[in-house]
Image 1 (cartoon, rainbow, N blue to C red):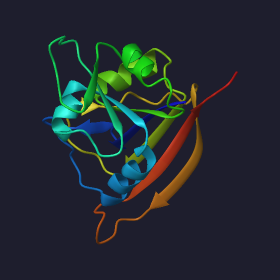
Image 2 (image 1 turned 45 degrees about the horizontal axis):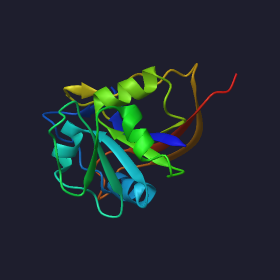
Image 3 (image 1 turned 120 degrees about the vertical axis):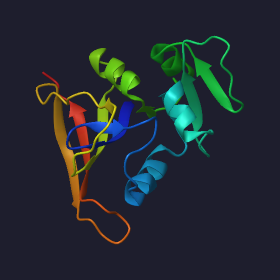
Length: 164
């Protein structure tokens, strides 16, 4: 199973200036719980915005730079190579960034989308691809109101690829 996991806004914003736009502790907690113990695949920019391998996960960085090296991480030249490195994991997560998400969706690589939808529009320079409801079916949804820790209303959504 290959899952794309992302936090996006209502205008599909992902980030700005290689950073997150919002701080949503509930999303970070859910991300940690969901991905711990698994392989997480990401582009180099996403890794550099995080800054280090995340604990209790196998980090695979996708980059065209053949000389790129980060201690504690695997380096892949393509998403397909990253998936091959992770093939023993029954649950692989693609965690960004925008180019990797776009490629995975356009090339029919993911089985599931695990989306945190932040109910707000944001100015951004990177965006998540449109979720085509002819291809993806919403199978789970939890809605939450803003509170003292989480500044925005948000929803946890799961989409499965439709079977025809």
